[in-house]
Image (cartoon, rainbow, N blue to C red; front, side, top):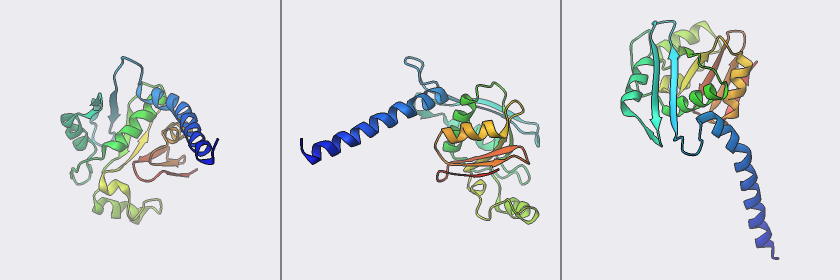
Length: 186
């Protein structure tokens, strides 16, 4: 055997092992059972507006435009009424985490999109609000579940290995975003 053969085999072995380890997480997260199809659903309510949403937004590899439009309105800055296109990759992380938590309870959405004005106002009141928050570009959501702890939600979101996960135990919520993979909080 040559060095090149060993290197290729080593790389393929690592790839195969990684795929086997990652497969159960994603299979559990999105229900990727043979013949079942790939369906992604988000269930949330807002204590601020009293609105709720329960919609399938992805079927068999395609986002559903009407569902995403409905989600954009739901995730709006409730203080200003501004609506932008919310990044569906954050929805994917939230939906996958929700599935891993094995609950039918909808998320309570504390914050989705934030206008720059709202973010500046919140930042003036709390050091925990980022100047260039991903909330301002529709890529982050702050979520809570009554039936699951912040630690459980954080673990589920981190298991998706996608985006940022902020653990806010004292405020009882988890931040999920589709930015670079990272985590913080206590």
